[in-house]
Image (cartoon, rainbow, N blue to C red):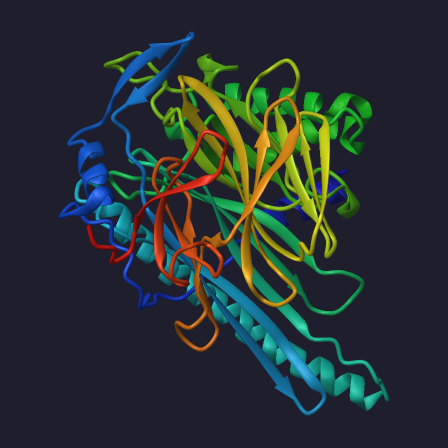
Length: 459
């Protein structure tokens, strides 16, 4: 365990992932307050100060919070030589799209974040390209017939984006020969008003209370994990060491704070990534409270959207039935595991992007899963699932969060769903709207995306 501990701490310290360079989007995505339904809705929900709190069902929620509109941009690159591909690289950046007149610092913060991460990614890709050339040369020298490409991939999932917090979950994967590559997650969380990166000391009352809660929750969440040996002594030591060194990886989600433990940190590579969420409602005493309202400082809006990476389970609430959601897929099937109930949906599901949606209709929480995917012919589509007592397929729609792959030579732009009552989609053939048009939507009663504004529409 001591050898694993040292290597894992070093890995956690070094495991940072880069994002895309600063870019000009080349698309018009402003939600201005000048005219139209969308503008009126945005103008109505923007507040001038930190929101107040309200009490409901024993849980305090903030009033007056609004959502931050975001777009991600992914750039692709492939380098080759006469023997084939040398390096496949993909990186992702993020920026605010639309006005944030009362939180201009988050715009600056995300631009600076993207620029900084792009430099790190460019440097790592340059080094990997040189190593790939050397690898090809050495393989040729010894008569090899196989010349595998190195890989360097980065992606971003938005866990939360409102007028208090913008929290990003970063994914990274690299392959440099050998049996398998290395992958993992880390996070960046920004105070929306100041633009400053948040620290765990901004959120929790004490490091000890936090680490004790993490260890307790991990033991509960993973009863069959290898770290359960000796009552989890190795895991407990590792969590304490990571916290002491400032190497805990985390995001702030709408209902709590999630911690990520990448392969080899707490277990074997085969066990994958361990995650655990400390919920505001379950452990209110360990979170900092506002001195003015007495409520937890960073509680999110009651309705929200949260992007879900594949194969990474998320804990949604402290319900006794175990409110957990995981999304998995291969080329022929999408598997949704929700509260212990599974739905297997057979379709060409090679490329998916999933978003969990918590919508408040009729004063009742309604849960849905929005899954963007790409068909075999390259056409995008949206599939929606209702999450009630079990996951149920609700319908497929000819629209997508995908914007365009025409910006730059190898770019992809995606709208991020942050607000269940106002989000953008792109119209596709068969939608009843001109293909490529930007649609402003809200989540309807049955989970379907309801269009209430069309780009450039008159009347």
